[in-house]
Length: 243
Ligand code: G
Ligand code: MN
Image (cartoon, rainbow, N blue to C red):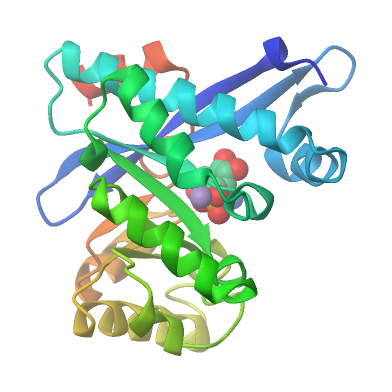
């Protein structure tokens, strides 16, 4: 895998209460010479096994922070960039240091960066996870729980870790409002988040029906093809000026 063929795409995060783009999730795409455009699911596992995930993760964080700094310089002062952290990267004892260094290098204020973690990651080594998360919160970085509802089902970690946001997994969102169970789970996650004073975002929103259901349930934010697929940086900025 050569890093120069990996590109960062940006998928808008929409605040449906205030009706505005609040930022973007940074998603990597690998333009493979023979196999075409590869999605993360097709190469992250390989990168994790080979250890290249560390280098790849650092590159994504760096590129995303410089991108968000660019937005600030362009007068787009409201935007947050959201970066996925892999389990291997989260286990690195110096992750908080790496984030601090990257924020300094890019000149991005910590509160313009959001990191996406998963449930399993936190439960693996709860003590170390707590320390890392506390250090990140000190910098003002926001923490969200990706794929919520599909991982390690212990709700106790919601109490002990400083999480800001839950991301309702696409597998539930895909089936709303037709499927009663997914609709009930989605509604319950929104209530749970709000009872705990957390924000909640639904990922993989593709239809008006899904959006209407989420608005009705009081969900804060959405992300998905209904608004936009992941875009190259230029196209993302064009989209902001011509929604
Ligand atoms: O779980 P996480 O948020 O990291 O996954 C995001 C993935 O979902 C990305 O690969 C992205 O391209 C994909 N994705 C984003 N929006 C949609 C959508 O509306 N529908 C589907 N099927 N996939 C989506
Ligand atoms: Mn994610």
